[in-house]
Image 1 (cartoon, rainbow, N blue to C red):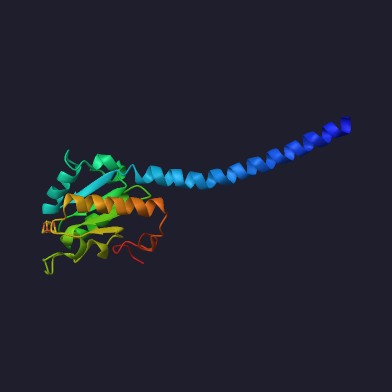
Image 2: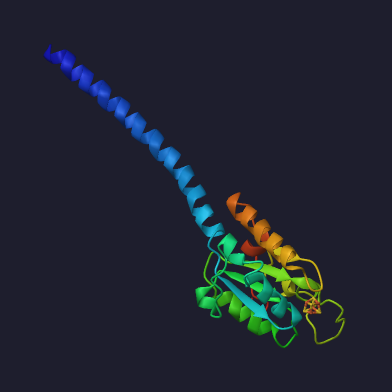
Length: 184
Ligand code: SF4
């Protein structure tokens, strides 16, 4: 009788251990999903608005288009409180080191949306003093086309970034990024 009880209790403990182990595996994969869900729905964007696209961005966070619906309404003007840089406007060569410094000061994990033709490619400014795309100096995750992009296009860019985060897409442009202003 006593032996049976010991056997029962040991087999019960074994089952419990396996159960706990399977729970911990399930929890780990779930935890990744929960963290990704939290990240994608709580961007703290910092607009780097230098021209008309900066003004256009204001309508995206305004009451009509209401970026808050996607959890990205906490706009910050300090890079240390932001994790999503929205480059909105023309970037001159002179501004480029400032943009890099701002990017470096942002919190990890951090993301970049290039909003509009000027930020993405220099736009129609084929001039010596204009950076021909902010991706020459910082890693860009999503490019939003347009001059200016419509608010819907900007929201679509934010949703594209959310999908990237939710599915844990690899970001080699970010992982391999080095500041162009640092000595090798
Ligand atoms: S893309 Fe067009 S709207 Fe945007 S900053 Fe350049 S010129 Fe202005």
